[in-house]
Length: 125
Image 1 (cartoon, rainbow, N blue to C red):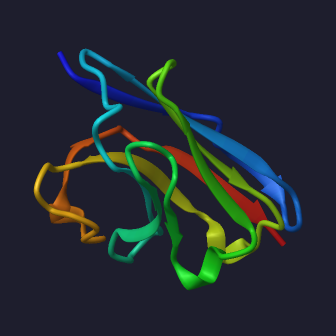
Image 2 (image 1 turned 180 degrees about the vertical axis):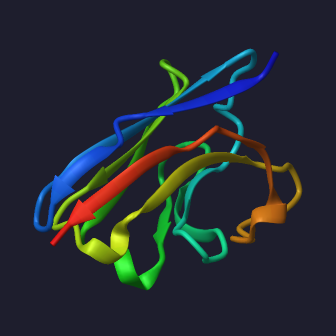
């Protein structure tokens, strides 16, 4: 059974930091683009960041550039999201996802095949 399991969420004050982890099991994802999405209450799920299969290319949505860093360790089948200078507007459930083959660098939810259950990040002001 293929699973993605996020961890590392929690409650943090504005300006603080968290590191999210996404551990994969059931198959390797070293050949897949991996991404983080987030969903705030009452809002649609939005793309946050992605990383190529090798880790050599990353991309971030404008609102997190310079504050968040996505990375991966293919030996551990794990993807990370380091979040610094957190803001209240970063509050959301964060999901990791594995890209579908053949969808290139499309950054919409339908371009991703496997999803974790999400981890809550709450930033207080």
